[in-house]
Structure formats: structure tokens, C-alpha cells
Length: 398
Image 1 (tube, rainbow, N blue to C red):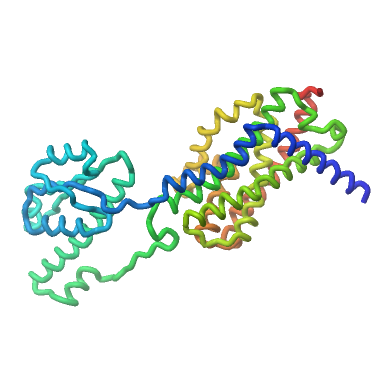
Image 2: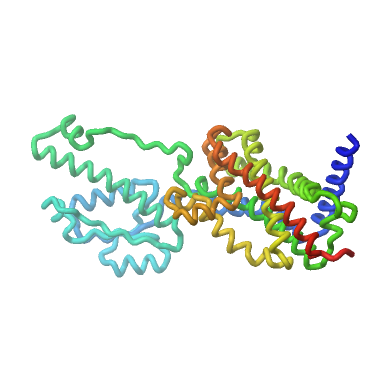
């Protein structure tokens, strides 16, 4: 019992020392307490309007046929598109787009009706304003919905001309009836898709960056007594590692609750998971990030500014490696293995399933187990990195 009390006392001493370092460093306070809350709020405001409606467009109809007029009328009836101008020439439509009056142009060539009559493929050209990807998405969704409906209408007309009407024609047109239903992103918006992944990545990067900043500051200023208390230098390094990890865990648990639970609810993002499952899943995630940050900070960070220079660069890499932009099944073997080094990869995959899709811990067993394995491996490397510091006297005592 006496030995256990000594161990707990040592861990508490390291915890208090690390808390003091955190709250004395204004840069770390900004990274730990402001950035994890500010970035998700900014992202939610940016992607708050997930879909553009009533996009003003111009139409250049050189076909002047019943089919093109019907197509234009249906486009104007979609929630995504509003036909503001009907132009005689492309030059006039391009001038409207340059002035910002419209954000897309639909062009019907002269042979549009001729191709339909001859049962050839008819073409409609769409030119979208790419100053915002939302404009392109709205123009494409609206035109595709009309295109599918027009294809059904034309098929029914052709079957009617061949003597098939009513139920027979509809069975020929669509032998298998299907319905499309989006379970976890009913609006089809980018916000509901991207924001959960971005939020967990913000937690990963801010925690990792703050730990590396503290390591770089201690190494740059040779303040070893704040990293390894003097009376613990002859004892096991795992007490120091556990003490520091508890400090970061206590700080980031309420931050994660605010960032990953309350902010999505405030901005009404799809959230089917419960707080208990999210916190249980986040426990190995936070620990793996902490031990990973301690390992990297102890060994590689020589100056305080070094992590700041790499922050933006690695954030983009980690976002692509998470599997949200490019499916992991299509990644080359090297890049898939590289992505598994970082806790953000299983963290993003598992958190999206738990939070946005309502998955249980059993459903994310592989990601959950991966995070625990990473936490164990990086705990060992963090302890060895501390021994590396002691052996080669990287820090000089004050």
C-alpha cells in the first residue's frame, strides 16, 4: 500500500506540474481552449446552408421546340434552379454571368429536337460558376432531376407511338421500381457529411499541437524540472508519462463534450449517437493522441515554433488519409498503412459511425480496438522517449 501511495503521489506531482505549464503558456491556452471551440463554430457557419436553392440561371434556347420549352419549364419548377433570363445568344448569357447576375448557363443547340425525333442522343450544355462549388452542385442536381423525368416522358411517348400505353408502357420503361432514401444525410449537404470528420480532426490536431508546443518550449529553454520532477529522475518514466497524460485528459474531456456533442446539436447536424457511446469511444482516441504527441514532441520537436509550421500541412494530409475524401478501399497499400499510424484515421471513421449513424461500440469494434492498440504502443514509445531524453541529457537541469 505504501508503494501504491508513493506512485500516486508521484503521478499527482507530475499532473500539477504539467497543469502549471499549460496555464502559464498563453499560446498553449489558445490552442487548447479557443481553437477546438472556434474552428467548429466557424465551419458550422460556413457550411450552415448546406444547399443552394433558387439558383439564378440563364437559358440560351436555340432549339425553340416544345421539348426544350418543357425542359426549361421543369427546371424553373425545381427547388434548386430559377430561370431568371432567357437569352438569344451565348455572349449575352456570358455577360450576365460575368456581372454576377446568374451563376449557371443552360444551352440548347439547334439540333436538340432533330436528334430526339431521329432517336439520337440530344445534348444540353451546362456552364456553372465555379466561384462556389455549391453553384455547380445546385445546377447539376436540378438539371439531373429534370433530365431523368424528361427521359421517362420521352420513353412513354415512344412506347405510346408503338401501341403500348398505360401500365404496359410503364413496366417497359421501369421494370424494377426503386426508391432512393438517404439515411444519414437527408439534405445531401456537405456540412452533414464533412463537419463530423473535421471536428474530430480539429480535436486531434489541437491536442497534438499543444503537447508538441510544450515539449518544444521546454527543450528550447532547457527547463527540465518542469518536464521531469527532480526526485523522479531515478524512478520509472511511466509515472511521468501517466501524470502528463492525465493532465491533458482532464483538459480535453470537457472540450470534446462541447465540440463533439453540444456544437453539432446547436447547429442541428445529424446526430444519432448518444453521449455515453461517444465518450467511451473518445477515451482511447484522446489517450492515443496524447501518447503520440508526447512521443513526437520528446524526440523530434527542438523549437517551440516547429509544430506551428507543420500544423496546416499535416492537417490536410490527415484529412485525406482519414478516408472521408478518398475511400480507404481504393488507397494504395503504402498510403493505407501510412494512414494507420495516426490516431485520426480510426478516430474519424469510428466517430462518424457512432455520432452521425448511431452505431454502437460493437459496430465500430475494429476502429475502437485499433485506437486502444495505438494508445498502448504510443504509451510505450512515450516512456522510451523520456528515457532517451534522460540518457542523452537533452534537458539541462536548472
